[in-house]
Amino acid sequence: MLAVVTTHPIQYQVPIWKGLAARRNIPFKIFYLSDQGLEARFDPGFGKSLSWDIDLLGGYECEFLDAYRGARLDSFWGLRLKRGFRHALRRMGAAVLWIQGWQVAAYWQAVFEAQTAGTEVWLRGETNARSNAGGIGRQFKRRLLRELLRRVDRFLYIGKANRQFYLEQGVANEQLAAAPYCVDNLRFAAGAAVARPERGRIREGWGIPAEAFCFLFAGKFLAKKRPLDLIEAARRLQNACQGKKIHLLWVGMGELGGELRQACHACFDAERGEHANAPNGRNGPNASFVGFLNQSEINRAYVAADCLVLPSDAKETWGLVVNEAMASGLPCIVSDACGCAEDLIEPIRPDLCYPVGDIMALERAMAAAIMHTPPAELLRAHVSKYDVTQTIDTVEALYFEVLGRAAAKSDRVPKQ
Image (cartoon, rainbow, N blue to C red; front, side, top):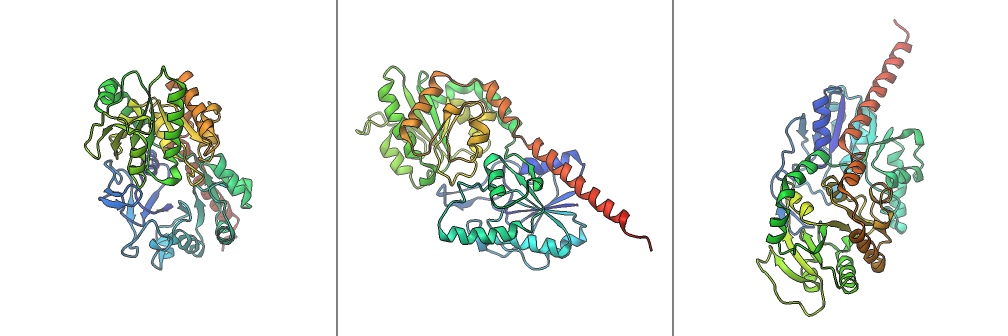
């Protein structure tokens, strides 16, 4: 049996669990450490309480572990296993334990419990060499991390940068297996197809002119996402392209919300209930602020926009919003600090990837997107390589390898 430990029901992981269950090829069970995402809780990044509006528990077997009360996902010690998890692994006959990183203490504890139980350990994290760079404190943490990685049997890497990170940590190539970072591509493609006939109405409702080229930012308004870079690049581009209207669509919330509004001419603001008609006096680009959009609503933004921009720094270990956008047929521009850059953007449009923090390079990438917009068919075809089915195929193949080794070992044991 395959035992999976993860922090909480995550909208990006659940399609994998449902896909594994639908195939019925391997027995597995998901162990959750928290119920975050099921009921509205305060998210400090968005600055509001939220919960996901899609089914996160149906279609597969799961259990919420008796974790410590008051569990916090934003603290290493916030999620801890209580003693005895090894007994649960033995009772269920778990051949493999699969963890989803090392950012909480419970993952480390689970690895040690699995070793005691004689259970093989798999890991699928998202760290890459850029996001792991740092000073002396980071170096000390990396030494501890290497001790953990030595106890892992298989590493399911999400992309090129993640794979390179493991190799730099001394992981052997034969321990690596591809499990691409992914979203439910079919759901986003279908949602975009439903919303596309309403594109004109959606844009009109959000104050986006029909003739404008609309750049979308979707995520938390935080410094590490570098949203102000997009505003400055859009301002420069608008000045250079007097014959083309540039419009910014902001989806999300966060601590920089006020600063972003001050730097833009807000034509629509759902959060403040305002329709602005006068410039802010700072020559800012026209913009619409539509607030947080849940999973069932985000397709409207992907259909309304003409291109997504993710200008984040190296703390953006991947950027699954890019997967969502591409599955919806929306072109994307990303900084080279984003973990997904080498996998999703550079192979098909290297001119839409730029050095992080380089405003002039971002402006050029935005101009390239306007001049030569990638066709939706190309985007969907490329992102199809990063789909839940790819990860499910890998998990099944590796699991049967484990069973095969166990059977071979049993055959070698002398009969009494």
